[in-house]
Image (cartoon, rainbow, N blue to C red; front, side, top):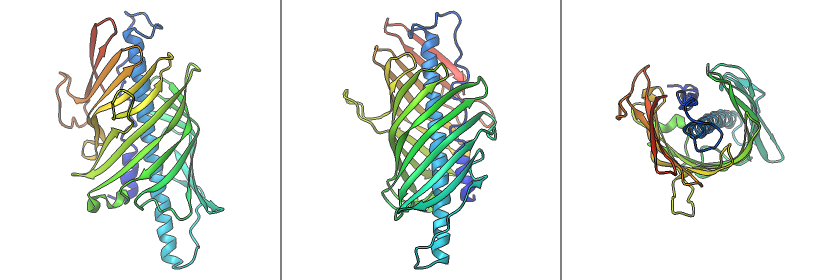
Length: 326
């Protein structure tokens, strides 16, 4: 498969809403942060942020691949000189954005500008992402480090018009070295991403969320992406992927207790994995992915639905279980 197609396909990994069936339960009072409805709202917020964070990370990977390709092309045509191909806005590599590469004062800058189109069919995005690196950095190199700035990135989910605005900065590291186009020969490629996001919810509430993940790309009948958390908390958990404060003002952390797996041969669906949401008020939620309607592990469903099981352990000792499609 052409590498551009691979990376564009990879951007589909998290473009679906995992909690499409997690609607408010009118039988439970909302607003006290302890009702099943409000707990599901937090789960939906977490899924929204996590999914869009992964989609943006894939866009970053696409932009870095594009820049690396331009750089290699320049090196072939300008052998031992400092000349490089500097491109203007490129359209179509990311379906709803343009990419601009520039260089000044020994700093190379890649700017992604989202145009608000609905090319993915399920969301719109506006805002910018700016990637910066030293001129001598090659993304394919082992240990290559890229800085990312997210500026007023507004993402609206079309099925319910829910929107969030993201700002913040993160660091991407190509731990292993290599590019996705060479994955089948390399065996695996490992990236990490760490940083902080400011999330503004559509009710005006603004919260700080931190992110720390490792992403391992392998090849098995197509690309396989395995995502784990890398942050260690004070309680000895070393697999925390996201932590911060929810829209209700309650501190939480999200652990990836079983690695999340996305497979190209399953149309880049989330085929396995488990999250545990731990809140400061002792409420816990466990979400297991890759299930059938009975809550059992299943193989690729084709165009059908996967299901996830949400187990809510409330602080009064009661437990609520939901099995919903995604």
